[in-house]
Length: 124
Image 1: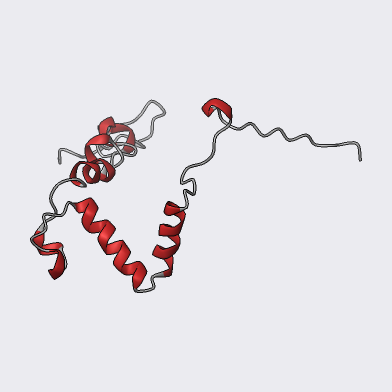
Image 2 (image 1 turned 90 degrees about the vertical axis):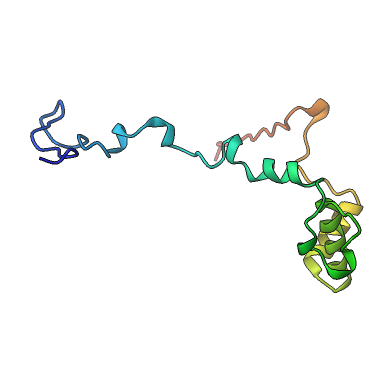
């Protein structure tokens, strides 16, 4: 008989459902759920750590090599070049950043959340 066999095993209801070792309820709980977003696997965390490191020369344009640019400087330079070339999306993004457009939702006074109260008139 195979090790993973469910032959002869029954649950409390007298059925074999859920008795296999690979059944969801029998799996190790560490692997259930959203594991890719945990801190150890966060792409954002990795990028934040790398952004101010010197950029790898092989990824830079010829005119930028040997200048000792950080990744942040290289990205900003590439965005400016693309704006000059007419990339409408990047032009809009750059304008919003330079004009001070808010990039996050606006909060109420003192950082409190904005409360929206809706009153329905059910008199009809």
